[in-house]
Image (cartoon, rainbow, N blue to C red; front, side, top):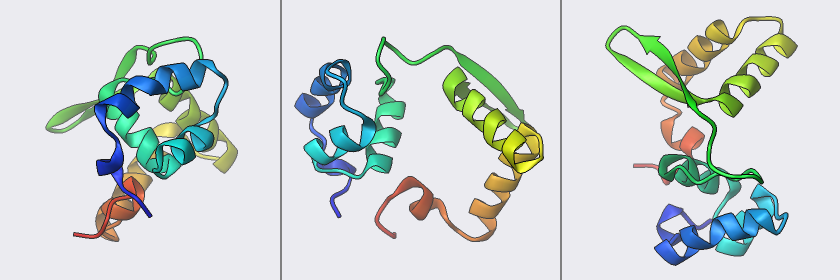
Amino acid sequence: MQGKLTLTQDKYDSIPELVEQGLNRGEIAKQLGVTPSTLQVQCSRRGISLRRGGPLGRKRNLSLPDAQLELGEPILAALRAKARAMGTDSARLARDLLETIVEDDLYAAVLDLEPA
């Protein structure tokens, strides 16, 4: 499995064009030699949209005791939809996900990174 280091600036620059050509996340990831998860995370960090039609949606804040998380509207909508499907609310689902990641030390697995 190849990691995020295989993405050069030229590859990042090609992503919006690939999206506009109608390629989906998996197809773009395969073409660039990374996993779909790596592509998603790295594009998110750089503000590159993997959706046709332009830049990432506006950000919303999720408050934590010592920080705020900026989440795009598509992410919040997906979180709300998944929470409804699971019979819970989005805040509880987000909390449960974060707790599980921390308690089970799943950072590398969730972010599709090589183990440290």
